[in-house]
Amino acid sequence: MIKRSIPKTKLSKGDFIKILSCYNLGEFKSAKYFTHGWVNTTVLLETTKGKFVLRYYENRSARHVLYEVNILNYLKKKNFPVAVPLQNSAGKFIGQYKSKPYIIIEYIDAKSIKNPNNISSREELSEVIKVVAKLHNITKKYKPNYASYHQKQDIKHCLEEYKKHPRKLQKKVREGWFKNELAKLELPAALPKGVCHADLNNTNFLFKNRQVVVLLDFDVSFYTYLIFDVANLIYWWAWSPKKGFDMDLVNYIVKQYSKHRKLNNLEQNHIYDALKLIILLGISWSEDGDFEPEKKKIEQLNSLGREVFSKI
Image (cartoon, rainbow, N blue to C red):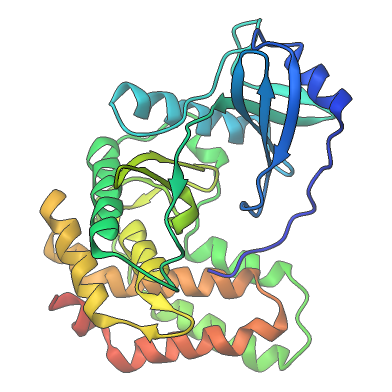
């Protein structure tokens, strides 16, 4: 998915010391910024008591962060592989620094696998799919507190995002095409719902001994149709910019997922629509120059048709 770039905050040693003074995590030793992540500033902090991760939210409300904290704590109780937030000296999970919320979460020493656009292992992919299905089994019908403060990446939101961004090239023609494609989407209200992670790229899965030990970054997760994440898996793991759309991998993803959570007929019939919505969301956030390549993806799906996915 095309991702918007948010200006990151450069925190100083003094800033880290002030933040850590609210915790019982030892004295500051060093800090290292994580390079992945497109919305928030994430820093590996090393103290005299160990390593921890600071997550500093650039454009999120405290209630938005509370949703993430609640879902992480809920999942941990259900033995799902997440890194949990740590309480500060006042017993709170969320702090505020320079008018922005932050949390400190546990550090888990593990590594993400290589970008599947360059190399993919069916064994690793099956692990990823199993974890996503487990998330859905745990959260089916579970709507976390503060869910309304997380963006619903639905059709309405997609159009609102598109209109927010200034458009110059073929403005009227492209907007007409965009609205027409949104109007074609079919996502029935009866589709099963739960918590979707919504950002299932390889950097958010950390492995150890060929098993996923943590799924990171629930910042854009939200309560929605569970097939949104099935489509998200397809987008990130079966659609390489170099190799193109891999229908064999799509089949593999859907069948592996169904081993852990059986898709009903309604869900299978509308994976196609969820996948198109994900691409259209990417377009809604993108610059003019990204429009045509993403449009080609929609056109490719149009040529395949919904029936191809319903027969998997």
